[in-house]
Length: 360
Image 1: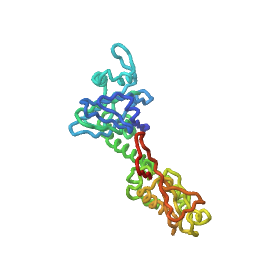
Image 2: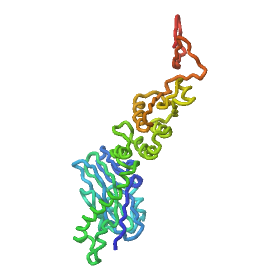
Image 3: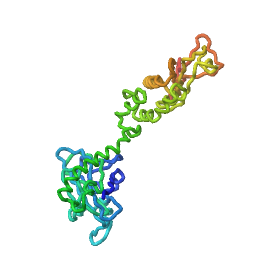
Image 4: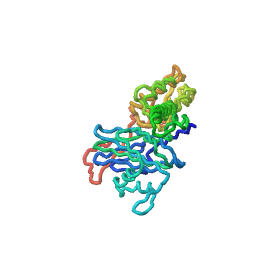
C-alpha cells in the first residue's frame, strides 16, 4: 500500500533553535560559516513525525562550499526523546541545545548509536532509521566561507518501493537502493510541478519574469525604471487598472504607485480648469499636480506609465508643487513683480551686522 509522502522544511526558526558552532543562521532559512572559526557544526533539534517507528526516507540540502571543504552529515532516529547523561535522564533536545556541552561530546551521541554518517553528499537516504524522532547534525571540515540552505527531510521517501509485494520489500537491499534513484527523481520532479503556480504569482515569481507578465497584460516595463516592489504592485492591480484604462481613477492609481504624497488631477474643461489655467476649454489636456519636490527621473517615469493609461489624443502635464509658492484667487501681480521662494536662515549670538548689509 502506498504511503503518503511528507516533507519537512527546516526553516530559520528551527535552525536558530539548534546549536551552531562556528556558524550563524539568517532570516531566509540559510546557514553561513564564520571564516574566522576553524570548526563548523550544526546540531538540530528533533523532527517529530508524530508516530512511533516512523520510516525516515531522505535528507536533502543545498551547499555552496570551497573546493577544499568537506561536508559530513549525521542522522539518528529513535522513539525515545530522552538520553542518560552522567547518571541523569534529560531531554535529548536540551542536551543538543546547550553550547557548553561541547561539539565532541554531542558527536558521541551519534557515534555510539545506530546512526547514519555520510561524507561528501548533500542528498542522502535515511533508510534503516526508524523512530518517531529524527536528529540531524551537519559538519563542515575545512577553512573558508560556506553556505547551507534548502534543508528538507522526506518520509518515507520511496513510494515506488511500497507498491511491490511484501516479499520484495527488504529495506537496504539492492532493489530498494536501485528504486530509490528513480523515486528521488520522481519526487524532485513532483516538487517542481507543485511549485509551478508560484512562478505565475506576482508576489513569488522571479524578478526576471515580471516584464514578461507585464507584456501579457499589454504593459511595457522593460528596463529597471521600476523597483521590484513597484513592479509587483503594478502587476497585482494590472487587470483592474486595464479595466479602468483612460479614467481619472486609473491615472491616480498609477501615480500613487510611485508617489506617496497627495495627487491632484485637473482637467482643462469646466470652471475648475478655467480658474486653474486661465484659458479656454481644452478637452484633450489634463494636468497632474504632485505635492512633492521636483525630480527629473520621477517625472520621466510618471510620463512613461501615464502614457500607457491616458485617453487617446490627450496631453498630460506634470507639475511639482513642492518647490512652488501659492497665491489665492484674489492676488494680482503688477509691473516688475517678482516671486521669491522663502528660505530660512540663522545667525549665531556673536554675529554683528555692520555697514551696508543685505539679507535675501
